[in-house]
Length: 210
Image (cartoon, rainbow, N blue to C red; front, side, top):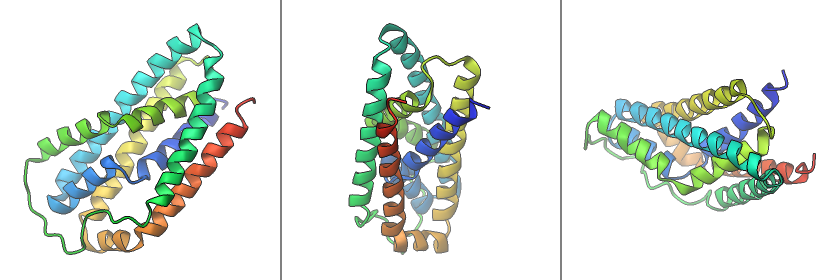
């Protein structure tokens, strides 16, 4: 039961990080709108696998770092909270910025669905902000000493959230009505995500000594 609490925290933070606008979202959106639903779905799978790679790297690195420098756990927790708050502020601030996809975009297949998968995976793993987010979130929510069941659970949570979110993006933006609705209300959606991310960061900072 105690392992569900850190998993819930990781799930919430990764979820809000995934839905925030950025290169990964833009890539899946463009594949879904400009190519096809299949392109978008395979892009979503690439994002999920990329998230797993980040999670594995974060788990391996954190275990070694915490064992060598126990005090770094507190530092990373504070840093993670500050960064999440900053990310929330940036999301809120850029909410009114256009996504770069018009409601009248005409789908044009420019490469194979398999190519879309590899582009998505490359986009995910090449994003330095994603690496910082994963390290920050895992440092903030995982206990200083954790076993392999919790680690595997965290990886499964990451894959499920990343893949599920971008699958919804692919399904939604490959259909005209949901796509146009998002483009119309993008500012409100992004402000909601940015506000929650900022509150989460503040909570992590204020609870760092607990």
